Length: 77
Image (cartoon, rainbow, N blue to C red):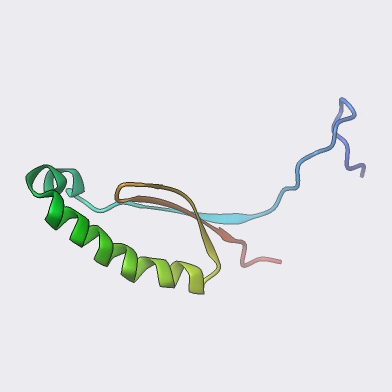
């Protein structure tokens, strides 16, 4: 099989991945009531989540407020 698509261009590399989306419930409400408390919660949340994500080979691809979109390589080789 060729590494080119039907129009002769190079095909992007493909593979399997696991995608994880996480969000803190009621974070917007907490942020509206106390920015200081919300940022403290967010700091603790990321302090707990980030090491686990990295330990398992995850890569954060989008981080917005309390929302995290993380991609992990496939366990299937």
